[in-house]
Length: 105
Image (cartoon, rainbow, N blue to C red):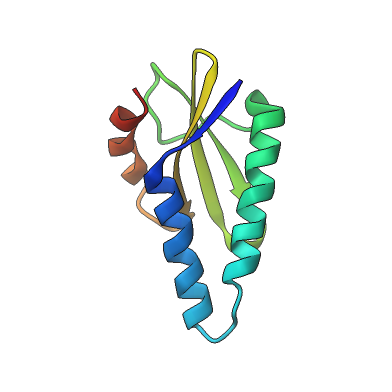
């Protein structure tokens, strides 16, 4: 399968990284590293991870949970491509990422 990381998802990681670095803890690099590991895991076995509970029933949306940072890596499996849609903190409003589904088509 091909892996397509949408610009929104990249921006999510950059923004979260800046916030973590700005908090004085300098954990932005660790977040980026964990995101890279998440992408490798998703690419290797995309259907291993849970379907999202806040996604549409007619699309195969799944999530990889980055435990350390409490972030959801939300992706869509469509034909032979994995589209990484969003990287959101678990406390964000459920379904906020759904507006990005159109960007994957």
